[in-house]
Length: 430
Image 1 (cartoon, rainbow, N blue to C red):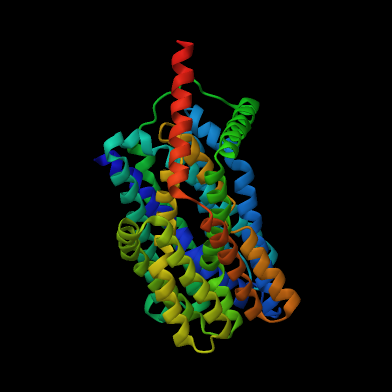
Image 2 (image 1 turned 90 degrees about the vertical axis):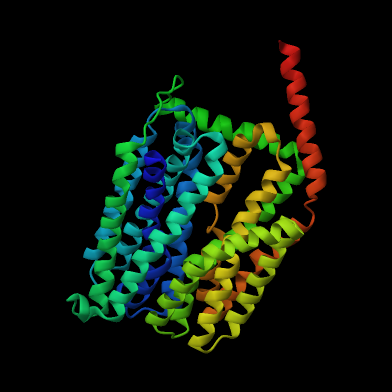
């Protein structure tokens, strides 16, 4: 049990970056402090570009890192490398002076790469701490630890900004800067158990250097070839990529949008905190919806809500409306992610699930590429931030339209046939 808790605590540790930095304080400080004096549409463009660049970078690295994680015996070393990268860059945001938006963007992009790159090796260590029958439970435990740990530190950071004098701080700006340091310390402290108590088995197929690059892209092309033969899987992945990009864009750009409308940063951060704590129980509730109505129907419900959110946000004028939208997003955010994973599991070959989920996770690394850049460009060209949030609705509409043609039963049948054909081929070689 010590290994399991130690593994899950890393999710508790690095989720502080996702909540306090990525979704919360960085968008606020970037617009109000580092981009002071600039048009809100320009700062939105810069933030959107930064998120897109970070996502593209980690997506390009993912095949190589995934191959190292699958074949190598240096998972913890690479996890340490990326964790230190994220920790140092997050803490370094404390020292960025007012108006230095370029440096802030650079540190943020590198920190995001550290966060995402580390997760590849963190996920790969799951099989070393959990037996097959307990894997779902242990995976869910890490997920819940992440919600709770990230939410607790974020709550403390929000209180610090609302009442800085209570913490011996001069003002809210200093409180935000200290929050970046707190993320680095939190991430570093709670990462220690995974390096001390989680063992890593030695691999007989350890690969390094150019071999890792070759193996990574070989695996990628093999998986892509198989997916092209399964039309239903390919359709799902296209639809998933579109709508999950919209979901991740809302997560990363919502606070920036609220600031562009003139809402106070305190209200926006409080709303984000509400989303964080509503999301966990709502994800469980959506699991029940999936059981009763099917995962595809549940996803359509969530996408309809997201579409309504983007339209409502276009007409939004009051801060109280942002609170309501935060609750609504929290109700569907975890649900659309969990039901997408369960629907995908139903239409892929059961005996090749690990390989197909590797491609699924790789595709997820490309999320938040189109949306943030789209919001940035629309805001800059249109001169009105309201158009930018409305543009995200295109991702939900297009993703839902492609998902409509995904036949779960046909997909399952074709997946089983591919598994059976593979088994026959294997037996014929014996």
